[in-house]
Image (cartoon, rainbow, N blue to C red; front, side, top):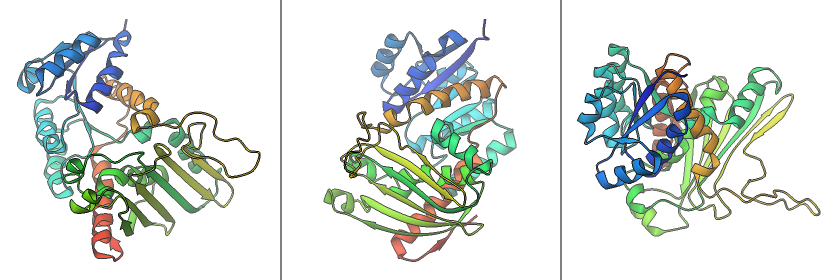
Amino acid sequence: MAARTVIGLIGVGRIGTMHAHNLSALAGDGVEVILVDSDSTRARDVARTLGCRVAEDVDALFYAAPDGVVIAVGTQQHAPLILKAAETGIPVFCEKPVAESVAASLPVLDAIQRHGATVQIGHQRRLDPGYLAARQALRSGQLGWLHSVRAITADMTPPPAEFLATSGGIFRDCSVHDFDILQWLTGQPIVEVYARGSNKGDPAISAVGDVDTAVAVVTFQDGTLATVSATRYNGAGHDVRLELQGSRGTVHVGLDESYAGVSAEPGFAFPTAAPHHTFHERFAAAYQAEMRAFVELVRGEGPNPCPATEAIDAARVADAAQESLATGRATLVRR
């Protein structure tokens, strides 16, 4: 019989509810879940569906002394909740980012290090089977040395303009996942970014100071180049891919039967399955693995898939990309 592990989950919006389902699926492995949300009715509804307990508020949740806490609320609440968990010695999983800016993240990082706290940040692509296989192919030497890298994140439809107004920009909200996975996969820091963007969709996106499509050329410390592209209007489906081209071989991530596109080659039928519509569908396996990894981290049975320091490094690259987008000039990544 597996050891009993109680996980508190703060926030049962779209992503929090998904985490609740994935944690509840681990009940046979001894995992119990306590939910809390500012909307108590919503929390009770989700708890009733999954057979979870509900805490009256965040203070009550911490008073219950769970073995770990999952934070799935708005960005402005991330830092205070991480600090609360760090101060009470409770391991924490938090959706990215650590805080609303790199500057605001640094005091949080100091507190994490001072308390020796365990903090995992939600860059779920690190647990996706395709990205894991690509990392192994590169690091085993199968691809030789890299000469070109191409990363794509394309949403099927944009989020509301109200959300984009507070997201920090397309590179911070969307491409930060690509910046993180590129540094994690290659083992190389990104040192410079040159970015451009455009708006051809909803004028409201431009009105809140964002773009709906953007491309960044990034330079790694060893001189390797990569392109990172993002859009909010990929009507064919949710498309997240990565291409690594090396001196000996090439590998693709995300080029599967649910690829959101078709081949123009005559007589070649690909893909054959329906495309993904959301990031939840595209990364379902990764999100499940992410919660399993957090439970193992809480139990001391596994490593931290994404420490806060590495998540902040990706945020620094996103900041440089946003600065380049605004100035039209290449920008060095400040560390």
